[in-house]
Length: 225
Image (tube, rainbow, N blue to C red; front, side):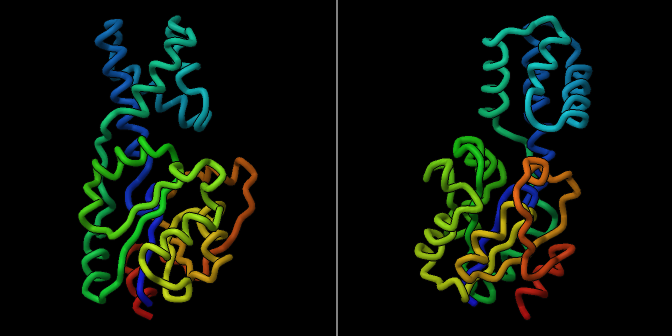
């Protein structure tokens, strides 16, 4: 085997920490602009998120605050998406990277989502120094987000790896594994995140990984096998 390609959100770091970071940034803005209680705003945002999931969180908040307008919605969305997040890798990720390097594996990342948002995450996590390539599927166009096979083919071409020489590691059976399995890559689901699956709720078809790792130590053991 020559390469290991990772998903980003909920695979290398907990995405909920990005959500909290964005909510705190928005709460700080509303505090400075309207002299509202920052902790109360943050608490309301988390409550709306936990009850309603992703979607019209800022619409609901602004209606509660009597500040609803299209301009304010766009402003809060912009602040959330453009902020520099305070996030950290899962414990053990850098150890996994170092062990893969010792075994001469190339390391890549393929990530969905708005490219500008994902780049801010990568920068905050300081990931570029540890990996060989990062594919932002949004740069290819929304039609090439997972489960499209295109980003996987591009990654393998850049890594000079054949599908049968490569692993793809992700958390989400509703998006992560169909593409790589369709081109012959081995896939590993890592079950670190406990979040409810957003894409399952959207009706995406489930595709199981070839292997399942309950933690990063299990992941290394599977790759070594």
